[in-house]
Amino acid sequence: MNYIKQLNAFYKLLSNNPLSSNAQCLYSYLLNKNNELGWIKEFTIANMIVCGFTGLSRQALDRARNELKQKGYIKYSKGISNQAGKYLIVNFVTQDDTQSDTQDDTQSGHEVSTLNKLNKTEEKKVNKNRKSFDEIIENYTKDEKLRQELKNHLAIRKRKGSLTNRAIEIGLENLTVLTRNIQNEEERNIKKIKIVQKSIASGWSEFYPLKKEKEKNRIEEEIPDGLEGLFDN
Image (tube, rainbow, N blue to C red; front, side, top):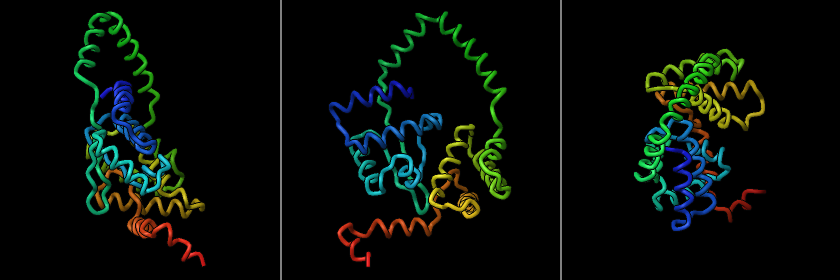
């Protein structure tokens, strides 16, 4: 999938198939997320992570996601038990767009060949300076136990397929979001370790909130807005 062409096609569709601002915000985040993951067919993200990055409440997220699904912008299947749901972004780039790209590449073959050589040279430089997976983890935290658990979790992700530096960085960003409300660093690291250990025990490739937190958030969301005042006293 071509990120720019997909984004352009998305905005063209909006004129005939409009979306709310929340749905547009969610779609932009999902498109960027899939781009970072290398355009895999389906990908999972915990609801808390999506809310953290988009600023949407859980109820607003549900409405925006359902709107995108109903209007054909995405496909979504709800996760089972504690697992996150799966997203699939519908490809709007037409065959004519692809053929046009092929014709342009043929007409400018010499220029493309030259650019490829330059890109390979730059890629070698980047690879030479690219951080190792262990270095990313060691730069993320000074807590030795947390480092070790993250490396154990990394071993699981490696067995499930290809892994990039950016994919690891996104996972660490998600872990930070899940513990951002804890002010004390030592307590925050303890919480991170528990989350990582839960992912290892469950064989998950991503990080999800602990079950007790999910139950607490669910109960809070089920309290109608009009009844909140009854609990103030």
